[in-house]
Image (cartoon, rainbow, N blue to C red; front, top):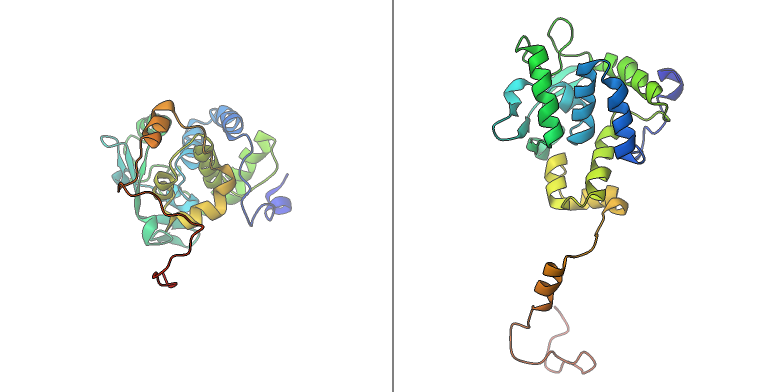
Length: 228
């Protein structure tokens, strides 16, 4: 499937990779033939970073001693810019697999470039080439319906929620302004799971703050203003 014939598919709205663990494992498997591509896909699928944030990532923003990635620049078709919003300036906590892939990528680059994912001349990758050539080729090899590169970010969010990640942690990882935005887009993947026996016992031990009985909701509240 060519880029031109499918570039609008899934352009608007959320179209995450279904069954993301199996799907992304397959993607990373064939991307392993070109090792830096595997590392690039790993960062796209398992950090929640936007396309421009990944392509504009510098080694100065990777802190292996703290397992953090500092997002402060974004690479667009028109060059470098600040991230999308104020909350997009953030630290992203690295999953162990991301730390491993970035260490491998550092060994490949050997600090010959300030960019984590440079081109052959050690400069920043061309965003148009990644979007219109590299990504469609990877999608075709994966034999899945086309969706834009941004859907790797959505796949990360749905995968983390399905695994029970706290939504406030995920909000900070992805750089959303507030929880409302996260819930609006991903509420159907929020997995409440089951509470542990320890948590149930703790909840069961909650007592009323006063010794007074709870008010009877069926009785009128005389002397109480109707306005809250």
